[in-house]
Image 1 (cartoon, each protein chain N blue to C red):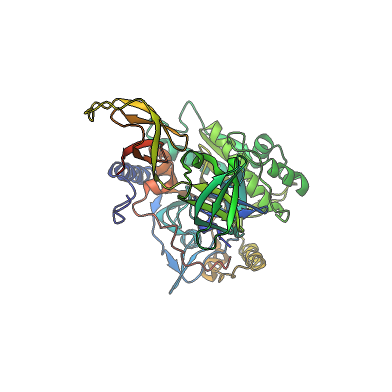
Image 2: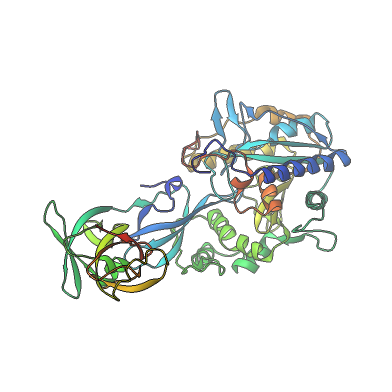
Length: 186
Length: 340
């Protein structure tokens, strides 16, 4: 259980039988009156944001959540399948649960899957991924300084802006937080 | 700040403004013939409050306010007095709270609450020195609202006569219209009346006062949580108490002071009983304070003002920590005797 001092941004709590992440917390109290903790929480399943107020003497349950590394296997169009490399157990996530990570999913690669009470509810790509350029305009040799860019489609279907010298078939490093090209990978 | 935890939280410029402000406060009282006094921050007993917990130290308690010690000075005949000191309230951390804070407290023998409110307003004018952002001034006097009227206006309830169910329904509508968040604020059903009123105050009345801006005195409070104020029988019975809000921030709390030692002892014992019901430890009764009342304390009005909050409002800071040299680290549990 979490006491009001432990209700901070980033804590994951269980309220009304659902998992939430705290996105804002404040302590409010009239000078002579009771203390309350106001938290703004985001639902980890459907993303809605609500506000809740607690008496500061109350405790809030910590959500039974773990983040674990899993291998991406394949998508059947409806679900996205991952496997725990240790136990070989598989989990499936919907497109909504996969969220933004969808642009960076490559078979056999490892991703961080969030499990709530053992059920997968979300997936996060590593901050940097290396992916092959599937399609782009031919490279302009020697242009490594001009700063101009062109769109390139990666093997996962994501489209990122790359410098002019990048060629089809080359592997590049991408920042998944921003979707920006970082460098050519070996 | 990260990486340099030894550095002060407040900037040099804010600390300079803070020093200037303190100087203006002292000049204000000097001109009005109010004497500065100092009383101990640590004493073996305190005046118990239901929802304030002192910090325990080896010799007694770090005080939640200098009230009882200053009243002993009043009984000793010192006349009008003020103090700039520190107060301690265990467990209070937030954008407007730090467990140790600067307090300005003063007493005016022979005065009424209303006269003291006029002086509080004059202090605000002096502190801002007619500068930008002054919450009140000659052409913009502070407003006076009855507690009940503020609740009717901002929360749509009557705090004295509406049923518990009505108050609960109002608090469930919950979130202020200023907040972009979906209205879902389901509260536990077991909140008692006082807690519901406190919740409506912080959730609806204070944001309403913030939106209104300026300086507003709330007056005529419910008698609960006014352990040292005179109570008018009514009906409805109201505590002769005022709270000053500036831009929705609670800045000062004043009383028409209770002078009857028998009634005062009964109220302190009552607070201790309520503390025990909440699972908190009872606090030792301040006997020297009650002896001073028995000797005879002059009729008076008194007020305590949060100096850090005053600085915060004057410099336009968002959080109280921005105007403190070394605010407490909220990740460290403090020495709490409250038993919550």
